[in-house]
Image 1 (cartoon, helix red, strand yellow):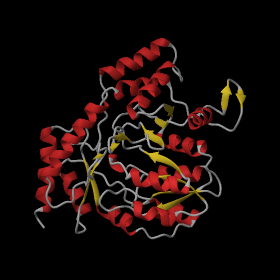
Image 2 (cartoon, helix red, strand yellow):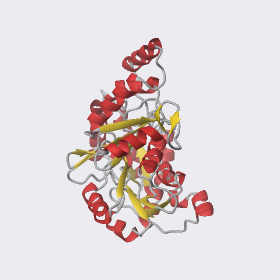
Image 3 (tube, rainbow, N blue to C red):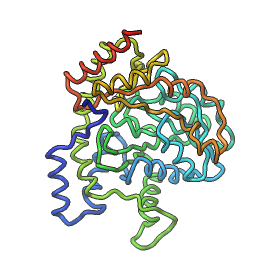
Image 4 (tube, rainbow, N blue to C red):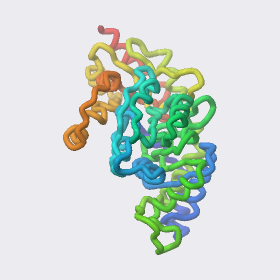
Amino acid sequence: MINMAKPQIGEDEKKAVMEVLDSGIIATGPRTKAFEEAFASMCTTKHAIATTSGTTALHVAMLAHKIGPGDEVITSAFTFIASGNSVLFVGARPVFVDIDPRTFNLDVTKIEAAITPKTKAILPVHLFGLPCDMDAIMAIAKKHNLAVIEDACQSHGAMFKGKKVGSFGTGTFSLYPTKNITSGEGGMITTNDETVDEACRVIRNHGMRKRYYHDELGYNFRMSDLHAAIGLAQIAKLDTFNEKRRENAAYYDKTLKGVVTPYVPDGYTHVYHQYTVRVPGGKRDALRAYLAEHEIGSEVYYPVPIHKQSFYMSEYGYNVSLPETEKAAQEVLSIPVHPAVSAADREKVASTINEFMSKG
């Protein structure tokens, strides 16, 4: 079976975990601090704050920017549900804008029309490893005095015009096992803002600046040194992992027929957390079944956009039309692109897709 994901865990990660166990410092400690420093360096930011997941990273970032009840945050509905839920967690409301059908990211030409006096932030999602148009987003945010919280949970190391994602506004990353690098489970917030950095550190640690003195309502969203040790070993391999993903993607780009391959604008560096094609003609589900018959994994990210999720509609009253988002949900299919995909694997994936699509 050619799996959709395969975490690259080796002797470096195992050794790092055993060193933490032997040290006796298992909770948040020196490895977490070192991982934060390494992650900030990777993103070219002054600060990085480790959390328990990408979801809690988003949640903490919302709170650090003082987003709350009555506020609105503009974002995409074509993403994992945590992007929208993080806004709901703080009592605010996500306002969904349609996507660019070529990139699957926010259509920046539609953002300003969605801004109201309640708008507090823009939450661009760098989906599948491709950055959003950050020049346009940062210009809009500056014009309207809005915060920018980047959902870079799928885009470790991706760049927009030579600048790393997560370094434009406040960045948030996931370190879930299927991501480009993992800490087993975990998240990271990146920022150049001293105030945001301090707020995030207090919020993730029970509202404490001084031990057992709680200045505000906080959470236990701290990363352990066990997870950080894995992350430290992984981040040293990020460039190698991403290069292998790009190599596999380049092969698919030149080989696949009958499907629409990913669009990468000039000046964007894609890291292919997912290699996602469009399958025209209503053939997506049949192609997926055909791949499964040939022991090739595939996945649909995402079959139900956030604004069409049942509880968003029933509990929050969402009834909006996002034509490009809804069309993409019916056509997208992701195929194996991770570093463990061999040349023989990708040849089998491509030839099987081409065989199916050639049948008409």
